[in-house]
Length: 352
Ligand code: G3P
Ligand code: CA
Image (cartoon, rainbow, N blue to C red; front, side, top):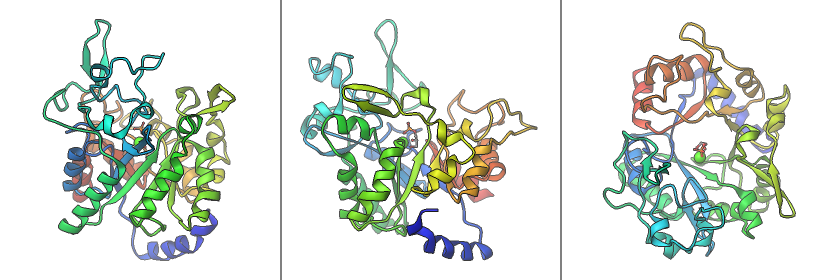
């Protein structure tokens, strides 16, 4: 257990004797099942659905501003390739870090798309919001926090934020310290203690340790930290030695003492849902993987990603979205989950 959260956790334990905490709903990239991800419109709609937290993936611009975007590229969700055709890097991608905020603000945001073999832009989720309709832009982290805090004032709910520091290893290689920039904004908006409604998440274990051991104490802050978990071969986190990069190995997190090691610097984990429930499970035989028990034994909260109601996105072992909620909230007993459809998860929990 993180030393600086021991007293708070002891208090929480006493409370749990008389009340079981309601598990959390985290609106993944906003209400991204209904509106283009990470737009302020998707966040406002998510807010109205009353989740507990709304997620922000955060990357940095050329002029050191923080924008809410899932990728450190702009090309999956914007018209950057047509607006700035000569600004791609040699890999064909358009990096947010190569553009100023003013430039990014001129881009139109749409539903995420892929380019098919004929060169056509094809929506990643064909049944979601139509591509290139209406008028969406990329928000800054500050704009999004002001939206959520403003709605907390006008509607009177207390909905939290759940920012993810994206690819700190990449930002560092590009000469930028994204973690300090994010912590500065969080502090500026009043998120500086474990009692505040914020979880700070990151896939990069080395960076999360740095945040816990160095940055938070130095900035007189103490936030709830969540270690996101990937498989090594996803290349989600890279480690540079000079100009050569190689994937960070997540293998230690799946070892018997992995979760105890994570609990030294984090308060929770964000695993991919097949890391908790074996994909070979059937409706009569849900196989919960050992990661769940070892995380709970280590005192960690468990918030898996990502729960979607789109066609073909419900695992075979679940009958439908509600059945999937029942399995994860009631059988696996997760503490919260990330979903693109926060209304459905909120409604499920209200009914049960
Ligand atoms: O941060 C939780 C979940 O969002 C992790 O996946 O790739 O959607 O950021 P990703
Ligand atoms: Ca995320």
